[in-house]
Length: 274
Image 1 (cartoon, rainbow, N blue to C red):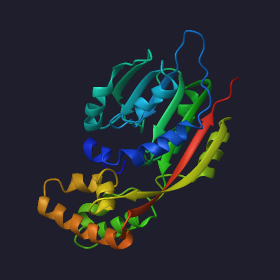
Image 2 (image 1 turned 180 degrees about the vertical axis):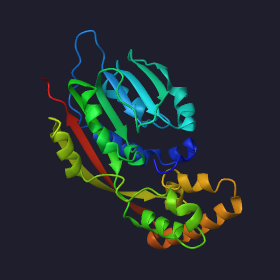
Image 3 (image 1 turned 90 degrees about the horizontal axis):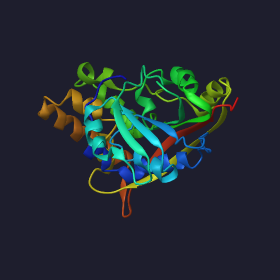
């Protein structure tokens, strides 16, 4: 990752509805898992965050054994409140892990990730190891944001590169190529022998409240900046005031709220049975 931001689970969860919808759309395209008699599905959630979407896996696989993995102590502390046995006979646990070097320690039926891999430089190079960690017929499924050329990100980059902030902040931002294009993921996974379903969706999210796009970015894109300026509240407030003004111009409010288009890329790759 470009930096090691401090995460705020409550800020992240303020927009839980919009952040959950893509995960549900992803799961809807996951094929049946290669479970057998007496063996519940084994699932890993990479970059599980506070666990609010991890628990949705049990809606489809009630008896699954699910492990959520994340490198944020703040997120894992929030997620631990959800850990333990489930009403459907499954079990949920959470563990710390750095996705830059994580490899499956046991065979999985499903490895899934929701809006996390864009924080992992070179994550596409790990696809082979993750597919190798699947059982025959298992699935790797993930979605990643691909809105790094949207005004929310280009304006943030321009502000960080302004003279006042360049030395402190410019190096903290993610590369605009943090996510690959759908065809790039498809080609890499097809070369591993997988049957691949890749697509993209732009969600026109309606945000409400004062400076709603700023509030959204406080949960994700702004985390490295807020972490870097945490010990300098006056500088932090100056930066947020300037960024909020830019966002208000780029995303004007309307009587129904503020439209915030958000492009996401989805990939579902099924490992061959043989």
